[in-house]
Image (cartoon, rainbow, N blue to C red; front, side, top):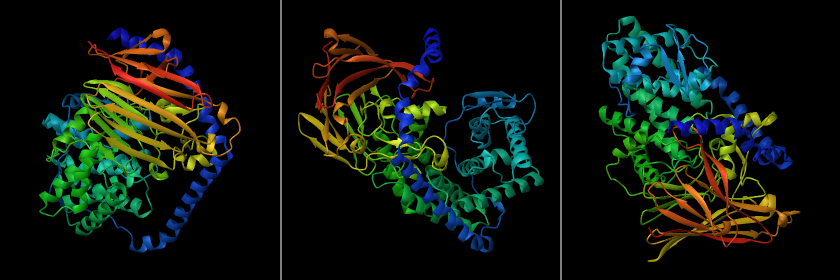
Length: 596
């Protein structure tokens, strides 16, 4: 294992730049197109309108806004259901703070006084989610350490500012941490510290309510509503905030959780994170003897089977739309609260995902359009991409995003080429606001992509079939992409057909464009070309073998990068089948398990 790790690190030093260069065309050309610039301008204009509305509301907010309401005392402490590691408490006491892949030794200084190595490290420090590890240590030393560190932050950074620790989502996460770990923080506290801590909770509440009133967008808005609602439940004397928080919570659940249980941002990781917060909130309502909003109960019930849709047999989550390495313990914890033990959802039309199960084989497919712009900063150009696993073996994957993403890796991971999908002319099916100028106001949002995705699902005693098409290549090439996936009832034969259908739009040179089918392999899969390169045998970790072929066309084995592992980026392979659009408008490929 050590030698393999050395090999992967040398691969990154030597070849990562070359890998990125393969995608430079699609990354740079998108932001330079006039039409895309107009789309960005329209998004920025929309932001300007929202900002203008905030200014109009400012006088009303100043006279009737949110005064700092300091809780009289805390009545309950919600359970933090995230897993803990008491050994981390020893590291913290020794002055070692590890966040976002970086370790810092404070050498006796307060961690809030040193120059942080990165914004991500600083956010990991100041969201205080690590307090749960100190609580798990269950010692007087850990309690004193927690109280001292919280006191340091309140003294040094407890007033709102423009620093990263006062981003709305960080404030919400810190408030939730303070509430759940309040028994740890307040055990043994004197009266002065208790009052300062209560005042800090009030400051957090006021700040979050103002963020929500000012038009905070995206998934952060739901997290802030959760934090405000939870504070109102936990504290005595905040009945008004409790009612306001519950109303905001209901409104945001209605807006962000789709009828099939998916999140509007289409990122599986958001489901995990939300359930880790919503489940304790549900318990908090019960602990206060208050009926939880029906919208909250329904949302949790819908989200559980949706979460299972994304899960492969060995516990990892499919890598779609911002999903990175699976925290298997977090997923297992959430699913342990699923009293109904619901089966995985197979058909999620609102979220745009499909799942096929047959024998030991699982196929998970993205059949959706990009999410609304304000929820699209993590979305990928992966429409009609899929992942495949057999038993405990993942076979075809998307590249995913790394645990601690760099900007260059993040952009590459979002391209169509980083997915098990078809790509035309090295151009992604969706484009993102990147670069300078106006883009910085809508940085990372999807500005163009498929707007019409149609899906048909059929099943009989012999097979399950999904057929879907999208129009993401209509504007660029005058083409629709149609993909049909068929899995036999025993799960031992998997067949696909990819078609490019002319729409009638006249695009010069589109017929001469080349398309490529990319099948990214999990790093544990070993490919071997056979039959003169017209087929590839894939050997899985359990020694089973599968034969891949594509209409007799050559199947290339090229390098790829797997970003979805907790051990960091890893070198892997991908199967690539290329052809000219005009010469091969349809291509059939097959995967079949070979007899042992």
